[in-house]
Length: 498
Image 1 (tube, rainbow, N blue to C red):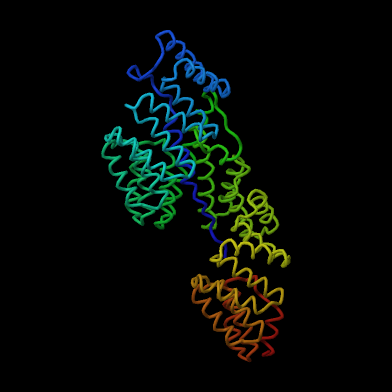
Image 2 (cartoon, helix red, strand yellow; image 1 turned 60 degrees about the vertical axis):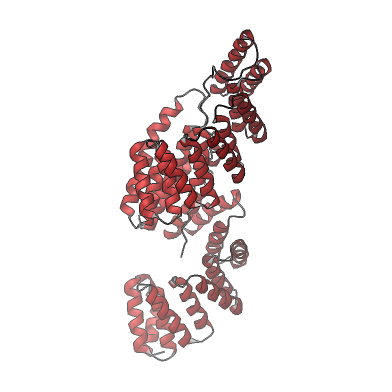
């Protein structure tokens, strides 16, 4: 009955990766249009180098002051504009960063680097059309550079133009055939376009070209799940987890290493490679844990969710998935504790509201459950899971009419869920429409042949209609599938024929 929570982190990781790919310090251009005398230029270079040193140490205010001083000495120094723009971007000062990059391009229009930075900033701001315009400017400056095609494809993918994204990436790969990131992004584009086999080939090629590109391995694992290959998914997820630990340990030894709790806090403009590795490690623990949970390997699943939360105690997806794991173990109060952690951080999280409502209904807190389930449905009227659970809650509160309405809506949205049809059977049984209830339970069993509770309820209906023989057959099937359903009172009713 519990939906999988699949918050995709791909785009968050990709935009962070864009920031890293353009974050390396610019090399000096002896041919650039630097203004100032030789003496002034030398002084400006000293300030620029000091700024870079301060930035490596994490002393950002001092770095910013040095870059500004360098530009006061030589306003035409393109590398100083680039470096200051990158620093502004890393501080979330997007408008100032855009201005600095434009000054850099005006100082040295032979390079498209500043235009690429402007495009990335617009992308991080969500202004994708403006991002594409900057990448187009970059291509006008250098049509044979693969990088603008890569970035433009990223923006096209965000806009849902999968075909154009794939064409741009084809060109990027043609110009730079050994760049693993282009294959990884094209894999995402192929998957979005429905070409799962093409996607798999691209993710594999990316991973083969660069074993440190763990995002490609994670994407390959997710694709294996989509292709019905859980063994392959487990293999790829485990590779990510095994690979990222030594890489993170190495990154921690670098000067200026900083990592804050909260994977979202570590991703964004100018994210460091270590931050991206950290986020990918957390995300993959959750993905592998979800795989284990769905396979019924709950001990392994809970261990992975716990590992994710040890790394990042704010990770809402890990709490949500651990909550569903607790439910599978029958640990209802622990499940509620975890989902409340999600709602504390994301009060409008529709999935968490729906799951919290379900849990509270099992605890008999039906009024609270009804409120949360209604909020979940308000946020997503197509949420068949919450509709079914609200039907059950309304049934418990005696509002049969509302319960029937929700049950039919849930079934209309997803006719493959035996639980939804079973709920409809319970409603018919509650109002004494036993033949209609039997028909619903029969349909639920057809959808899920080992659904013990549907056999049990159908047995009850048969007994109510005086069909003790049929009731006995269904009762035996129910207790074989789930011995916990054995009921002494019902057995007495079978013996007495009522």
